[in-house]
Image (tube, rainbow, N blue to C red; front, top):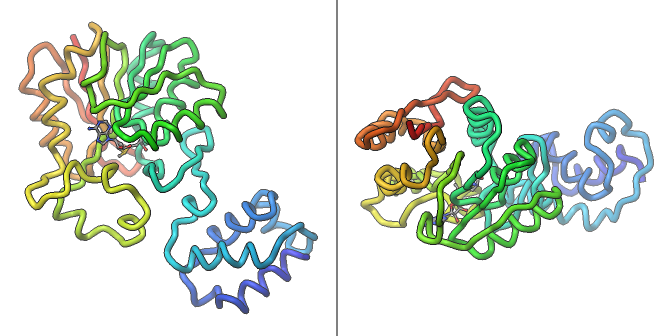
Length: 279
Ligand SMILES: C[S@@+](CC[C@H](N)C(=O)[O-])C[C@H]1O[C@@H](n2cnc3c(N)ncnc32)[C@H](O)[C@@H]1O
């Protein structure tokens, strides 16, 4: 079947122009279904492809029903790699790449790296590939997330130890680099999130606890009194923060002694990472 014919069939099925499926999403789904890269499908719409049309139309229907493309195809790109994802882990977000950028600027060759709340393992694996000599540990409270992180680590050829634990409870020793993208959405903000996010991302990855009183800042408060004792001298802890949280989170960490606190901007110029240096 030619790509052009698939487009026509999908149009008859779903009226693509009027639907919410973008061209990019459509070709990502098609690429997943036939195993040919999206750009090649777009460039050569008269090429013949091997495709089970009914199966492909099921994917189109899933997208029409509001499923994110990454959750349908089970793959998401992050930094320099592709990660398996499913309903148990947060889709890695481009803004979280700021943590990797800040880490690479801050510290040349850490010997020990800890990723708190590893989810898909996107930060742990990316850092392990950037710092091949480092010993990397990833922790998460979710056993299902740990399984996905282990799969990603294996596929990418990383040697990472994954531990199921609640934050620092099961952690011993000190580290040169700690990274953490904790749940930071407030209860109020959670109510306003798009259904796509609410229905397809685990709530434990988004919000610290599902109660009216949740400010979104709870995990930073917890880490602010503890993180220094898990850092080596000269070591850094990097925390992703929500769009307007940087000043508040900075203040939490500034109450401790012997640390230097800074905020760092993402590509859009928003303060999205707080660094804590153990001096
Ligand atoms: C925002 S997601 C970050 C996932 C991944 N690191 C990323 O950047 O895409 C937060 C992660 O923290 C985990 N988490 C939530 N509460 C936790 C706790 N008390 N201890 C350990 N992990 C926790 C969630 O399961 C989730 O995987």
